[in-house]
Each structure stands twice: as C-alpha cells, then as structure tokens.
Length: 302
Image (cartoon, rainbow, N blue to C red; front, side):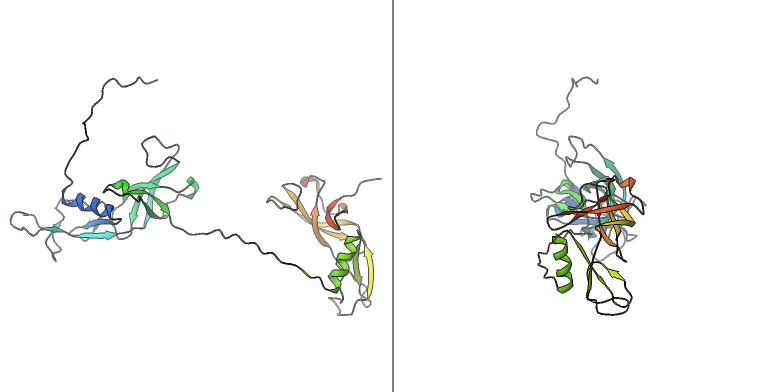
C-alpha cells in the first residue's frame, strides 16, 4: 500500500498565467459556445489553435487578407491570426475506454478518451466521449459537444462529446375492437364451447380451420360445418427467445399443429414441455381457458 504524501506543493489562490492571443481567443470562443482553429500558411486548420506551425516551426501570424506567414511583428503592427470556426460536430479517429473513471475525470461513469477530428479541422482534439457503453464506441463515430450552461472560458466548457442521434424509440400502442364476420364469429363461438369448428368444401372435400365460407382452392361455397381436434400433431415449430406476454416462460415454442380431421395446420403456443424436447410429429392437445385456446400441451397417456 502506498503511504500518504507528507509533502505538498501548492500555489495559494492558484497559479495565474496569461493565455496569449491564440489560446485566449480559443478559450473566449469556448465561453461563447464556439470552437475555433487557426489556419497555417499551408492552409491547414489547427485545432486547438497554435502560435507556431508544428510542421514548419513558422509562426501562424498573418496580416489581414494575406495567406503567408509574417515573421516580424515589430515592423508589421497589424499582425493577426486567421481564426476559423470549426465543428461543432466531428468524427472519432482513435479512442480508449475508461472503466472505472477516476475522481478527477470529467465524468462519473465509464467513458472514452478520444481523438476527435472536428469538421473543418486538419488536426484532432482530445476530449471525453459519453457513449454509454464501450460497444457504442468505434473509429468513425460522429459526435457533438455537450456544452455546460455556465461557461467560463475553459476546455471543460465542453462537458464531453456525445454520439450523433441515429435512432429513436417510438412507443407504438393501438387500441382497437374487432367485430368478427360470419365465419370468424362461428369459429369463436365454437372456441367458447371448447370446440374447433372447421368448414368442409362440398367439391374437393378439403377441411379448413378456422371455419370459412368459401374454398380457397376451388371457390366453392362452404356450407358443411364440422368439428376437428382438439388433438393434433406438430408439423413444424420454432423456439423463441424473446419474451411474449402470452407465453409461460422464455424460451417458448410456437408450432404449426395439424388438428385431427383438418387439412391445414394452425399456429399456436406449445407449453408444458421443455423446448428441447419438442419434435415434429409430437402429439398435442388444446388447453382451453376463458373461452379460447391458452396453448397446446403434449397428450398424456391415460
């Protein structure tokens, strides 16, 4: 265990230094909610702005309207810098994840330190990105600054950068009432009596469930009403791993079940059996509850 420090170096009241014309302008713009860089003689935009070009060592000073550097500020009193507003959005070039954050870090939750190339800039700015999870971070991620409301002229006036909005969640809920027609009404009436009603075509003799008024194959009018099921066989099935309010548990099975006496299967929940034990051809039987089919379950031997 490291021992507690027994020496402290401190400047009472804080250490004060002048910012100079370049960093001073940068910090002043931050206080106003803007980000600026400085353009070099080679037309590159440095962010944060610098007084000297890191590639050539030349000062980034220019006279108004002049594109090249001016080296003699004594003989040229009207010297200035070519400041350029950039961003505010940018693109993550490189990043590293911080988990957990330390006491003096800008955020109290896991975040990323990132090199961010702001739009219009030719160099990258180091800042924090509040991405939520490490999975959200990637090179090429588009980010925007989150500004503090009480800005004072500091790089921390940008609290952090946050990912660009690319998706939204819309809660969708529609309440409606179904008025069944003649065929569906007859079918639902049968379910209320724990009976599956089907229609049998008088021409091709096919039996359809739910009950319907015409044959989809030959178009004949169906007048013959027959009862099918309640037992049947699984023709195919799927194991579902997403929750469903109708299902007893996750994972659950939805299956196509060919009822005894029918020629087409119906889809329904399959329960009271482990998902891994369901198989094609399995014999099942309807479980009725509240005037409808709750689900199907394996047939039990008497």
